[in-house]
Image 1 (spheres, helix red, strand yellow):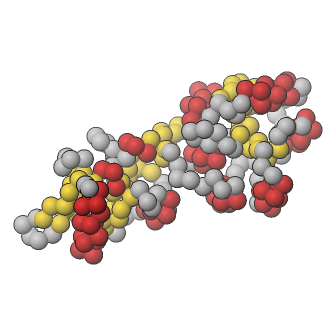
Image 2: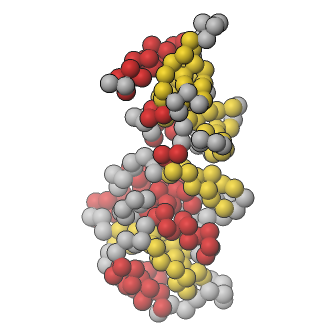
Length: 251
């Protein structure tokens, strides 16, 4: 460890659990609790301000859970180390341990916290995906993230109109802007399958923003989005199923 203090952010939706972790951290030399948050979204907001080296992250929290928050953090060029705190049973813990994921069972014990801090390591995308699957918390994200310099921009799901690929890049279309992200269309379709519809090999539209199909003079079809404010080309093979979907949404 460096002689300088390691900054730690404590994230848990239960105040007593946060208080216990803060008391334990006070007993260790070289560590400083710089803040606390009650859910994942607040933790991400605080990360930009505090830049902690380590985050003690609860897994199950209302709103944005710990796994989703950590997935966003892992997009950073130099993400913080994350140690999960959890109340899962021994079966789930065995699955985590097999993937070499740092975790602490609640109530957190002093010696285990000290050991986890000494061995804190950054989690890979594969480890996070495995954790989400084993913990049965792999619900679609509430936000997507874009890395802008050394900061994260979080995009709420309800603001997204469609996703479009251009060569190796994918952009999120909002009402008045487009933002580049690292996700592929394939992974987005797998994650949000019941919320999006593929209208073309290079585009997914959020179903709740579909408005109508419009035939062009050359016979091609375009889908209208946001009450007709935007339009996108629809490939011929998707026209029939898209028309059926739009019709069912208007019932």
